[in-house]
Image 1 (cartoon, rainbow, N blue to C red):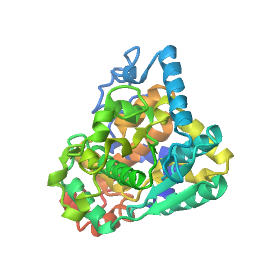
Image 2 (cartoon, rainbow, N blue to C red):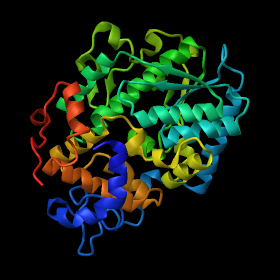
Image 3 (cartoon, helix red, strand yellow):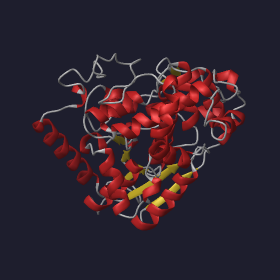
Length: 380
């Protein structure tokens, strides 16, 4: 099933289909939609996390802390104006999704003197809708834009390895984080060459807290200066790359002077907008059409494979670590995500829906359903 059809089906058809599919589904929390495999439910169907008073404690900060971070972030962007060695002051990663689309708009609107370069890293697995969103938003925003196309064969090797050496926490912590960190490193190398002092990444507050343990908008400077030796659960040396391909990973002061290494900035961790608000705003601004806002359709074409693989291997989706805290905080739609998680579980257990989206990706990566533990035929 294509991502666009999947998004439509999950919203309009699945509530009816669920009645017949119920025997395949794991119970989920009535409030946050998390699987009972991740958090046990009480007699009322409420998970243990939702029963605590502050289930998203790590993502919560005081009003004073929020104001301090907003002030510091604002000063960072204002202070960067005109500091680029050549044409640009900030490199902004732009994927065509809701977060990066709104981020690019906000930076241009709030800091009109900040010289922006939008950069899209096309790993060869971008969805057609993401490409469409990129073209539409750039045409409206009028920001300088660059598309980088690293060798697709390199990504195929990496993804084949991560799918066959899955992290204990699932595909998000295998393929997704590895892909994101590689994108960041490619952008940092580019920023050094172009004399750009800031690299801006559109990670959400939840993603930043998950990776750094606290709410902050910058990466520790010692981390930025050091060469990358590990990404998520893998060491760089174990990844199936040749010597030239390894150069895409960040080398820090092994290659560059300290003063030339850009700062990595994560503004959405401070601004912390609701998911539905971001969708609404980018549609209102004309950056993305209403049918193209779902992360299911704007993310890369490996999303269906990642989803069903998690369910087959773990019994839950690794995206639940990210989105259920957002639901508890009132920043994401619980019905939308429950439907999607249930559809993915049903697909993983029965083989339904996955023929048109999962099998082509497996073939491209030279893997079979049996190689990754998926049903070899539909079992509706």
